[in-house]
Length: 437
Image 1 (tube, rainbow, N blue to C red):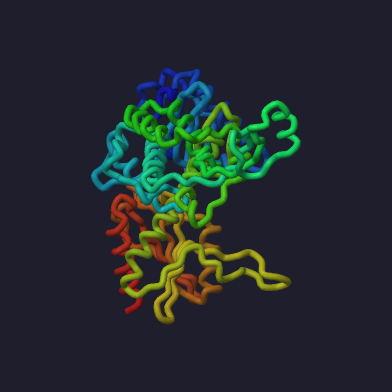
Image 2 (image 1 turned 30 degrees about the vertical axis):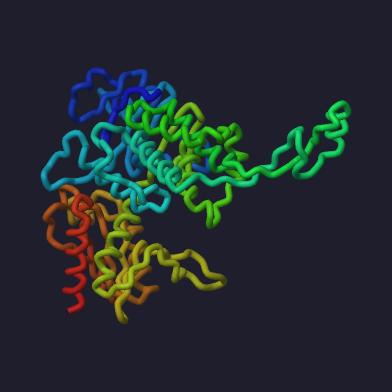
């Protein structure tokens, strides 16, 4: 069963020091749970290949406070082995000020997640989810269950499954040696192998196993009821006992397309996998999303909706160019968004980073990002480069910022208000029209 929950946002500071329990600068976890979180972080940074994936969880020491943990650039849910959960939400700036209870933050975050290809968004009903009452894991569960309900409505797939049995009538293929061994005294029987059209195929076995596991994990009455109802549709199906083997037997074809999303999510739930490059021991679970790519997908998707009607061709993760051509094509250039209209090309790159209101510190823009923009400009032979940062409280209402290279490259900044994505990208479209004239 799921335990207690601490809800934090990116860049919040978590402490296990009881003296700071009521200090608004810190999020407090009792000493045992804090110790488990630190252990979790060490465990997830254990192997060499993925150690750098843990740059997002910092353990540092603050004088008078002790060890503190800050989390950035990854959001989602961490569940420690004692059942305690830490839910990390993105830091989103609202024009109305503070988002009490993180209700709006959660709603926008889920809207952003919908733009991912590996998310069950086609049946995502924003209104039907009691977002403020459910933690993220329960919400993801709820989405999975909605997807299973859709499958059941369309009809779960059966397949010809090979069976062996000692039958009273002959069908299929007689298995001679077993027949002789079993039926010396039973001339009326036939030991045969035959194919039976049955729902006991790997996809259904894995869905059933997932439902049974979620039944054990959920604390939501709504999810619990839904699982009980759905399990009745899988009565004829045996639950998977060897997940890895069954996943290897799954084939997504034309007639099993309805299972594609379910299989990705069954992997998440059954194998404790995450949407990230790392995973921990089975005692802990993390369902974490890299905010950089969530933001990039969301902006690219919304950008298409805004610009295409105005005659722009919009592509994301363009693979057109390499930095070097000899001795072979090396160092691929992949701008997040490439917009073309007529002979005009505009390159846009999204960065999930909070800028600061200080011209002397280059607003916090990293030098390597600017080198990257300059390379895009030269290879795509365009002077029009845009960096799209999320709007934060400090930069709200800031005048336009642009950088000129002196040799034909202009990098402009645009702040994306993720809480009002359509309006903010319409503003960007208007800016594009102005720079054209």
